Image 1: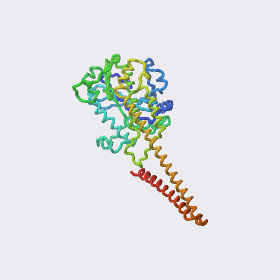
Image 2: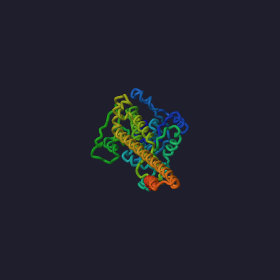
Image 3: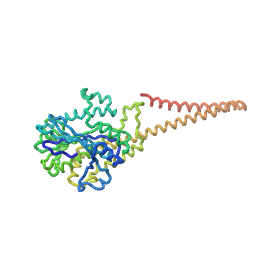
Image 4: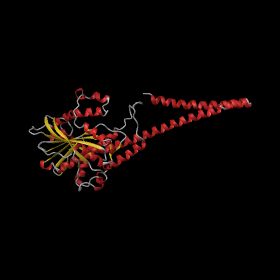
Length: 420
């Protein structure tokens, strides 16, 4: 997510996608990326800033270049580069755009950038969701008619193709989250991003009487970092927007990936509105329990960023960004969601076991009734008294009544299960 330091503000926009599961074969992943996109790079980190124990337990982040291009956003023609980046242990794919003003362009209007970006990216996003069968009727009705027929291919096809190509190298989740999430990061000098503009960029809003909306910026060397969670503004002298800014944007990308993992688990398995014939299946409770444990393991640094970093400056920035994106609260919501799904799946399994037990009881009642009924002719032949015959027939009727009760319960359950 490194910035290109050209004249004018630089805008970084990472889009996060679900790969479908945790990558367990990074060598296989690397081979697939090399065949498709050429050279593969490993994101390097400053060893003085990161704990080696953390790096040893997490596969390296790998990236490769995707085709760039131009886009007219905010009244300016922007030149963009694009990199595809994979966080293997999280199973997250990031498509990172770096926008810089084109040659000869006048000063762009970064405040219009966001609205134009949404329209621009939806030209690819809406067809992508349709091809993933994730464009529900309720969502389709909310999309403006002029955007429904657009089929621009920006990176949606690359995401779908890569997801299919690495399917054999991942430990799959019980679902694949089709939707993406993106954030914006603006980099520039105080002259390019004055206080009034920087404050409005943090909230994607027009002029506000309160510059920055009450957000306190954080200093790191020659940089000033301010973030609302959805938008981040990094300002500093031109010579300062270099290694320090790259470290900040790298942390922002990682923390955004952590947030996205929580998001996909929060949205997993909608328990409402599932029809009987929808083909939806809830994951096994043991699988959900294992996923809850894996999520807690992979995001253990959210509770204590000292697990990840040992640089006081970067640690302060990471804590600031984690608080701005509210990753900790998002992780708690994801864990609660997984726990609720696990309980629901276990209760469903118990209910199914109870139904099977009732079926066994019904079969036993039929078998016992048939056995007793077979004795009635024999009783008549040996000359048993009427009392013995009545007693035997009473037992027979009792078994038949038990069968009727059990069958009624099973039939009612089956009717509710099949009712749309």
